[in-house]
Amino acid sequence: MSALLRTTTRIGGIGRLALRGQLRSGVRFKSTTTTSSSIAANVPLNAKSPRQTVTSADGYTTTTTLANGLRITSEHNPGHFTALGVYVDAGSRYEDSETAGYAHLMDRLAFRNSERFTSNEAMAMIEKLGGSIMSSSTRECIMYQAAVFPHDVGTAMQLLADTTLRPKILGEEVADLQATVPWELHDVESKPEMFLPEKLHETAFRTGTLGNPLLCPLPQLTRATAKSLQAYHRQWYRPERIVVAAVGIEHQQLVDLCDANGFADLSPSSASTSDPASDLTSESNNRSWFNKLVGSGASQVSVPGGQAVYTGGTWFDAKPDMDFTQVYLGFQSAGINDEQRLYAYATLQMLLGGGGSFSAGGPGKGMYSRLYTRVLNQHAWIESCVAFHHCYTDTGLFGISASCGPRNEHALLDVIATEIEAVASGRAGISSRSAMRRPFASHEGATKLEVRRAKNQLKSNLLMNLESRMVQLEDLGRQIQVAGTKIPASAMVDRIEAITPKDIARAAADLLETPATLLAQGYVDGIKQFYPQVAKHHGIQA
Image (cartoon, rainbow, N blue to C red; front, side):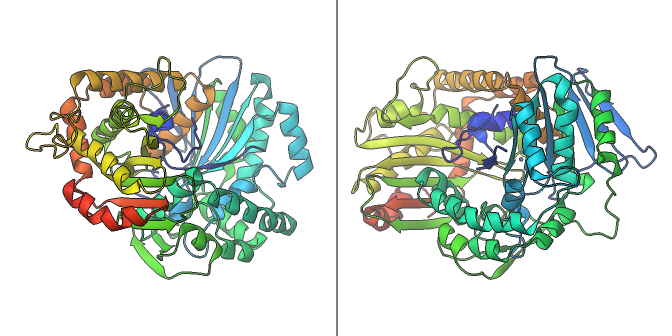
């Protein structure tokens, strides 16, 4: 499933790993040194057995749940490299005003000082292994991964275990972050492809959770201490929230490595200890995302049970000197738990496709997608136009991002709204209001040929991405963490194949049933003035 998400989502210009390059669970920021039905960790414990091992029906995936709730999962897929990973069910959506940005800081503190290794010793070990070790933080997960030769798995597991279970956070390391992270924040703010997807989340989820900043706000950064970060580690790095995954290793060998490195020794959370994700608060105000990073504290908004609450909204950033005006039009879509609609939106994203006004072309480049044939090939003044889908456990964001020269932004909004409406017109009872103005706009939505092409491209991307061992690893670890089981690629292909043109039209029509989220940066006078009229014309809830 994580592979599916990887295939379908652009991450603010930060491409990553199988359906996630397309349907990615949000932006993540990587250091190289998408949870269960509820927000609480989903751990299938068996009180009668200290350990429970389950093998999938195809015999390919084996998962052991330890007595403390920690899960160990593996796929024995022999090859030249073995991939190992530790996945912690934590991230920015779970944070409050006291811990905002701490997942980001824990990512930056990975593979430094621990109980067994100094920072220099850890770096020397990484260099000896070849440096193929990374950490990253997302809205719903903090992950640590390594790809090594099979004879080095013991050393790699030592590094992963120490950085996740036994970090020694020192004051000088926090001071180092306080000196370097502000540069990272300014760098992100200066790049629309990274900044605007974050602003999109803040605007779409104004009550927090998925709208919380992914990067540590400056006020929080200045208050962070080694003691507070250690407290965050104790709160979230609990055994029932951790999955250890590996690809290319015998399962019993992986379990033995976990035992030898202390994973089984973690104390389980007591029944009296409340789940850290069950009482969430978040910062919410109307200032820009970057101002939220550098500004003062904000009011608290309680989010019952941690459920993401989609609000929609608008945000305009007037920068008339920019070469291009950037526009994002988004809507609430489906989360991982809504499996049928999830596959429909993954296919819809491939069908819309898109890209930049310049492309080298060639087979498999998506040049037959709707946003190429109906937008970029028809309007020379549009610089880029791309469909995006950010997908999370309980909800998602689907839409189109585009850019154009100054003073054309109001027309750009009309064009991208037309494309969503045109696909939705394939649903019975919905007629496209765009056909009269644009003769090439379809009266019947997506054709069978377009849907077939989109499904073929989606399946192709999924299977090609899964050829990467690191993609296989993350797909395995996140699926076990999110659903407690692994959906094989063959089953995902079958579900993609079952999508029909009606499913695509219904998914597009459902978008128009939710309030829109509109962002514009650059020359924005026209879009601010004409947005209400454009929204009314296309049936968009402004």
